[in-house]
Length: 116
Image (tube, rainbow, N blue to C red; front, side, top):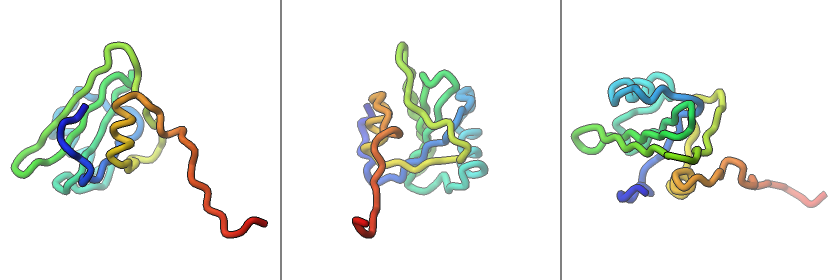
């Protein structure tokens, strides 16, 4: 579990597969070029490997980059294989994701204008 309160951060998933042998520098380039986001804003950028058992979270903290990594020994993470470059989630969804709960398949909100 992450010990810092990230509820004030924007949180972005890099959808699809990422080669997590990549270092901070290469991942930050992916954020700017592929995800079209500013790496220096108050945001978390999350990447997942092919096996879905390793996740890295990258962010800028005042005067340097921070990277956080979690490797699952047995289970797999729920992850989007979308063609989109990114998906924004909230801090509660991040907590669910790191707990292994697939919120991507949750019921979607329906918006109707009338009954008929």
